[in-house]
Length: 386
Ligand code: MRU
Image 1 (tube, rainbow, N blue to C red):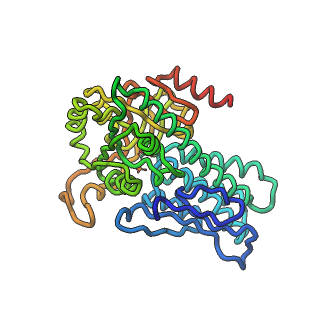
Image 2 (cartoon, protein in one colour):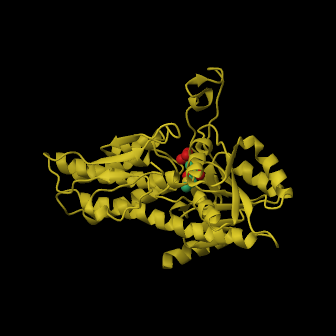
Image 3 (cartoon, helix red, strand yellow):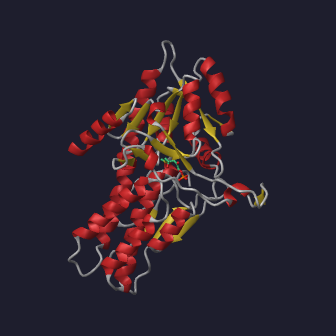
């Protein structure tokens, strides 16, 4: 498995991108005698040591996989949830019952799987619209739901490829006189594993490296779940993109050294889980402190996210729900106890970077420089009119 392998085997899904995050094996002529439809997810908890798939058969299974981090990353969570609704429709089609109420509760279960990434709720809204459009049918609209899930999946890959070009242009335009390339730092995992393929921030990094304007990537470990060392480093090594891993505590030192060096770190490039109407951005815990450090060292901050990550209903980041996870994630590592069992633990897994610390938000609809309510509002308005 070179990236997330995706081989959708049903005719309707023949165009599904090869490196996206899911694998469905649907049977659209199913009845009780037909085998169950399954969703295969690469188990990200086991990477980089082991590549093993988890096979899921219903929405509840997909919701648990999202909660337990089998699949993670804002766009990938949305895509997986959309497939979860489609899976449930296949189950209901085989078993019978009140399909509308069963699908409604499946959507609710999926919506409760993780709170911060708005892509989850965005994808479920799209699936709910398909359900509503078929309300008069006696059978669940499983084919239409599968098609919509595949559309969400494919759209995410297209969006990533567009964002990657825009982001690379921003990097190229920022190079100083005589500079042909620079280095970047990234946090968490925003690559093919976290999306429908290519990646958001890591997509920009991949494209900028291919264009020769990015020399090396500094990867933060991203404690406590090590999305940086386990997943981003894994993707970069496979892509043969020069990368160096460090604890996030080394970020200021790396930035300080890089700011003095020709071709040193010029950009902190990150993804997002939810962006408020004024550009305040929720992303993996530690992003805010990295943005403050970047500002202190004259390094620019780029957020890369599709419009599905924007939450126009929130005026600022203050109201973005921040997920806190189990204390065991800090008290144990690799099955070994690394903190006293009785120590009080605070384990927030996202923080919010105020828009003042962000130099550019790159979306599939273009780039917003120095984001604020006006510029983000203009972007969202433009995108709606398209
Ligand atoms: O807790 P995770 O691993 O789901 O957090 C993921 C991140 O914070 C990513 O940076 C974000 O989802 C952007 S992914 C393209």
